[in-house]
Length: 492
Image (cartoon, rainbow, N blue to C red; front, side, top):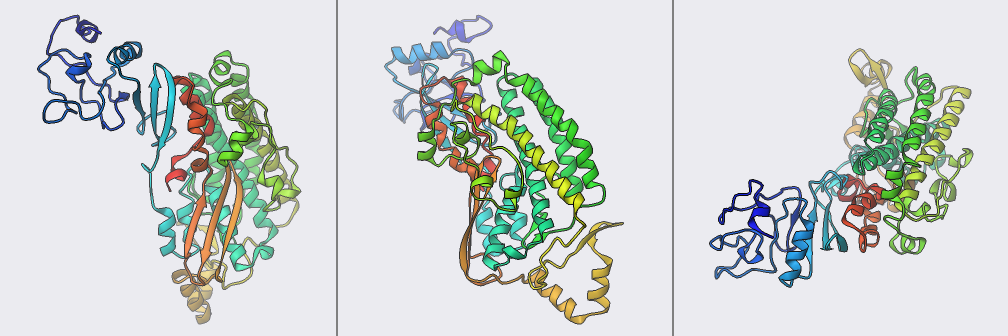
């Protein structure tokens, strides 16, 4: 490689350095960045330039450093081969638009073939699980809903069902609560799947899928905002029930919106399924068969793309899922294309469940949305008022002017929280990404002794090496997108 190649002006300047590309750094794994190339590499001119990674005597610290300015992989690989280098290590991320968050991928390359792939996580660590040990059981909802920020309602359900099982009140949860929980989870599944399809499409050049997908997601988020008051991180599902009942007009809004959402699903399908560009980028890419999934504990669409119809909503029903009609979607290609097809069809199945939930809510009169035990039920009894959202006037009138006992109970329950009998529980739900579970341990106090979540994104990331090694660099993007990882849930 000559200096003229590196200088776009064609000026033969022996002391000129090539500009480093901050997006892609090809370096030895021990080297932190891409300040410049060593004179020993033969990539930058000028024998007087100091090696930024060299020792005090000018020798290399470990391996050699290459700086790629884009579009010159063949030249770098050839240069490395001439110098006797056997590998090039590339950092993809953590600030990279195709890693679905702050995920760092360390790729060892032979030309454009990935010979080794490793994940570097922890860049979004929030300490949520540890913080929950210092908050009451009810306050834990506000924390766990922020883990996987694309599926907050699934985390709330998994956590609250675990608390309810420890309390021994599972059979006391009103039926209306379970129906609304299912309604919210399936809407959330649709909004999560379409983000996976939209961003995955954008990364391989299908930009229209992105625009259609986010238009569709916006329809779902408007419904969730009407019901819970927030677009994300809702904190709406509480131990023992819900924060409040459905507001007026919610069912009508869902009924009016569903036809448009169905059309959006069809539009995404038409833009993706037989698109030759999509097929060329996804078919036989990110291959992982059933044996690999079982060995790594992979669940969700990645597992069902191997043909195994494993879905907790069917195998271990919760929240009354056994009363709903829907199909467990499978595919048999074990690749990124099959996972895409599964997510598209799963959105239709979720909308089927939503329609059944709406019918059940219309056919039954309104009822309680919290357990009757006042030593557990959060006493807020929220109602929309002129100031937005606050305690209902009836509740305030009782605790402030009619019942001193009610005021004392309200104060203790809100500030101290309820006590949960000693024990531990594993509560699992079928999230949009696979099996999501809360493992809760109680020592009999008002706070969790330990809270740990099995996040499917964290477990599924184990498949990166199996999916990517032996493939091309460009296929890493499609393979990671087919896993649909969310780093908030991975690092939590």
